[in-house]
Structures are given as structure tokens and as C-alpha cells.
Length: 115
Image (tube, rainbow, N blue to C red):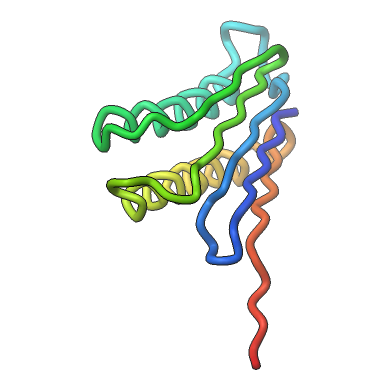
């Protein structure tokens, strides 16, 4: 199973996301769920770099591990970076809706307190 963990700041902005595991939907090289998650996540990171000129810190490892951190302050395009990242989460949620046995998403949204 692919597990996606999205960590957010109190403002609701994405601070980081981690993706780990393999879907197990089909044999390696033929797994459309793994391909979808990889395409969405790497496509977003590449779009942020190519369209906005922002290179986010990325770590990759075994078993489909990907971690991306978003600095507190980005000199140019903070809102656009967040919009692309929120679009990524929405796309990953669409995959999880269709293939829930193979993808789980935990989006750590902040709780709002009313005073």
C-alpha cells in the first residue's frame, strides 16, 4: 500500500509531504496506481521548479520513499507553490477514491480555534 502523509502549518500551508510504499495493484512496471502517484508527485515537484523556479528539498529512498519539504519563506511565488501542492493533494485524493485499497492519504489539516 502507498501511504501519503501531508503535514501542514497552522496557516493550512503544506509544510511537507511524504510518500512511501508500493501499491501492489499489479506487477512492478505494470502498476497503474504506482505510476499515477509517481506521476502526480514528481510532476508537481517538476512544475514548481520549471514554472516558478523554486527547487524544493527532496529526499528519495527505497520502497517508493519520497519526502519533500517546503521552506517557511519562499522569495517568489509562495502562494503559487501552495496552489500547485494543494492541486497535487487533490489529484492524489482522486486516485485514493478510485483505488482505496492501494493508496491511503493522511492530510494533517490544522484545527481552527474560535475565540
